Amino acid sequence: MFPLYAGMGQSDTHQPSVVIGGGMGGLIAAIELAAAGHSVQLFEQAASVGGKLRVQYTDGQAVDAGPTVFTLADVFDASLARAGTCLADEISYQPADVLARHIWPDGSRLDLFADRQRSLEAVSAFAGARAADQFAGFLRASTRAARLLDGPFMREPRPGIVRLMGRHGPSGWLDMARLNPFASLWRALGQHFDDPRLRQLFARYATYTGSDPFQASASLMLIAHVEQAGVWQINGGMIELARALARVARRLGVVIETGQTVTELEIAGGRVRGLHLADERYIASSHVVFNGDARALADGTLGAAARRAVHRRIATDAGLSGVTWVCRRRLASDDLTHHNVLFNADYRAEFNDIFGQGRLPRDPTIYLCAQDRPAVDHVSELGAERLLCLVNAPPAVTPLDPGALSALTERVDARLAAHGLALELARPDVVRTDPAAFARAFPGSRGALYGHAAHGWRAPFQRPTARSKIHGLYLAGGSCHPGAGLPMAALSGQHAARALLEDHAST
Image 1 (cartoon, rainbow, N blue to C red):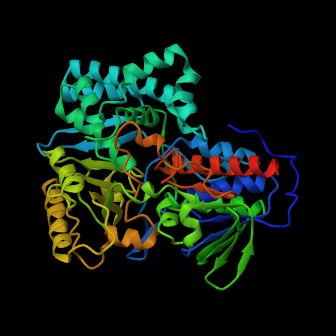
Image 2 (image 1 turned 180 degrees about the horizontal axis):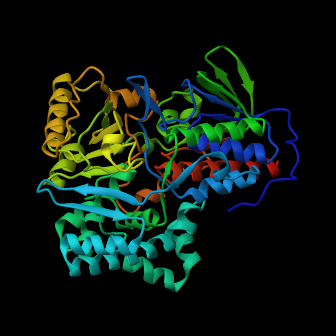
Image 3 (image 1 turned 45 degrees about the vertical axis):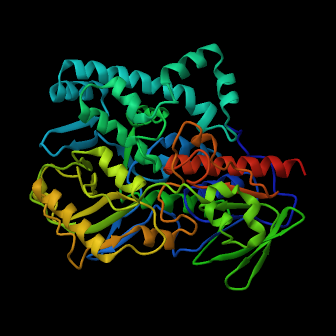
């Protein structure tokens, strides 16, 4: 990582560094720049910061309606340390004991735990001693993948396969061969597990990047190592992370304006010169971080001149979207933990529907986040629980057929009811969001929740990096390197700030 910035002094220009977008990448970039002594202004078009880390209200209660899994807390601590604080001083959070509960149509169930030995014992009870041995081998492979890719890929601003292998030497080539990144995640998992349920469970990691497990690289198995290193629950909900980062940024002097839309970037001579706001203000700045979907630039959302900032290919290959339902329900079932996954009987059919046919899945995998668990010992103490239900869906810009959405809601309701979970998702108090709504909320995204699909081993190396093709314009967010997810977006903000500071120091 890059060094502590304290003592670098104020920027030698009166122009501010500007951040467009108050998601994770934008907030982290603003903190890094302000900690380095820059004057920073951040503009967010929504009413509050957080980006996809957002809440929706039902029955007067706020429910997390975006990312619900928090990992790699050290990424955030690195930026906060440069701001003179730490995560523990800004939010209240604790490690999750149960990482997730997985349920299959036949009623079989498997919990994975933060404690590796408990997970091994659970897998043995679930599928036998051989499966437990295979799981232990898979975890070792996941650790090798993380060692291979964490520093020289995820935390490297400009990754490349030659640079990656050069960092590791001959042992890296051996580890790469063992990882077999040229195989799909699904195929690689078939070499690790005999039990098809375990193969399906870990294939779900591809969806964390908006991808199809039958096309995504086997390198995504590193996510198992990341989760074993710690999944955290934030008291007050995930939105508290965004609020805390905004507080830190403001303490450092960052001016944050919400409800402010940037309409155009002014570019001359191949350099960014400033930006125009919807309220007709003009801000002169030669250093701008764009924290949004890179496709928005390619689409001309910030003006025709900004189109050349990214390769046109970024305008294609949108990854997974989703349909979400947010509600509060009083459930009688004790059969839930915080993170719950209800698998279908035919995983391949689900992704053929989405990526092959471009339609809503006929039999989706269901993710259910019971956000008030496991805060109490018994369900009777919970009352009405805050619930987020999500299924994978194809990206879409135009509204889906209402009949198709209603039919999907009925199918999800029936699946949940079969497990004793009466959510009644068609009721008026339920807040439903579909891919077209996500497309409207996040310009350029096509409704994709995770940037473009990471299909094939080359895909992770083809994401836009921090420096755009326009001098002084830097990129951050889940559509950029190193990809989707809260810590990845935070890393992209660190990369963007680092690139800006390096370029500023050289002028």
